[in-house]
Image 1 (tube, rainbow, N blue to C red):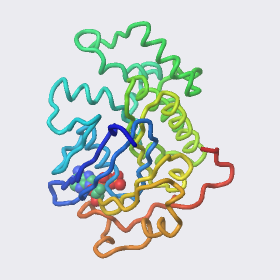
Image 2: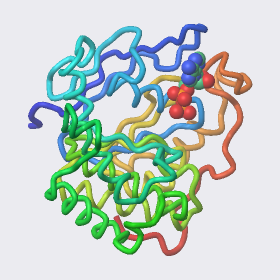
Image 3: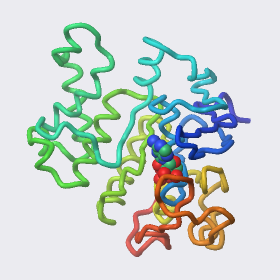
Length: 283
Ligand code: ADP
C-alpha cells in the first residue's frame, strides 16, 4: 500500500483565456521518490500541467495537492514555502548568463532568506560549501568560476540541476530539460538528474517529448495527448503501437495547426520517437 502521495492532480483543467483547453480533466498521483516522466508531443499540455503545480499558471478547475494539501489557496509565505520545496528546471536553462556558475547555483538558496541577506545575496559559508559539493557531484567543479554563458548547453543544464538541488527541494519539476540539447548531452543530463534525485530521495516529474529517453530513465511514464492523460504505467507498458497512437495518428479534432488556437497540433518534432539508441546507459 502506498502512503500519502507527494503530488496529486485531481480532475485538473486549464483553459486559457483564448479558449484553448490545454489540460482536460487530468488525475494522477506521484509517490515520494518516484522519477516520473511526462511524455506527449508538442502542445499536449505537459508544460501547462507542470506549471500548475507551483502556480506559475492558475488552474481553471480541479485541484493539485502537494503532500496532501491543496496548493490552490496558498498565498504569501505559504506560497513561497511551496516554491522552496519545489525546484524547477527549464528548457532554456534560465541561468543568469553574466554571473559565475557558483553564483547561479547559490541563487537556488535565495528562497531560504529574507531581508538584507536575501537582497544582497550574501550566503553563509555552509551554503557555499553545499553549492560546491553539488557542482562536484555534477562534474562541474572546474567550471565553478566561469561565467554561465561560457558553458556548453549540457553544462548549462547541469548548472540548472545544481541550482534546483541547492534549494533542497522535495520535488523537482523539469520542463523539457533536454529539448535544446544534442542526444549525447541529453542522455548525460538526464542521467545526472536521475542519479541525484535518487541519491537525495527527491521526487521528479520530468516532461519530455522524446519517448526513447522516457523509456531509459523513467520509473513510470504518464503520457498526454490533446490535454488528456492517455497512458499511465511502467516504461515496459508503453508499446510501440501505443507510441504511434500518441504521436502519429490524428484523432478527430486533433490535427489543427500549431497556432495556439487549440491543443494537439499536427506538427511532429523531428526527434520523435524511437528505440533507445546504441550505447544508451543502463537505467
Ligand atoms: P506542451 O508542454 O506539451 O508542449 P503546452 O502546455 O505548452 O504543451 O500547451 C498546451 C496547449 O495550450 C497548446 O495548444 C498551446 O498552444 C496552448 N497554450 C500554451 N500556453 C498558452 C497561453 N498562454 N495561451 C493560450 N494557449 C496556450
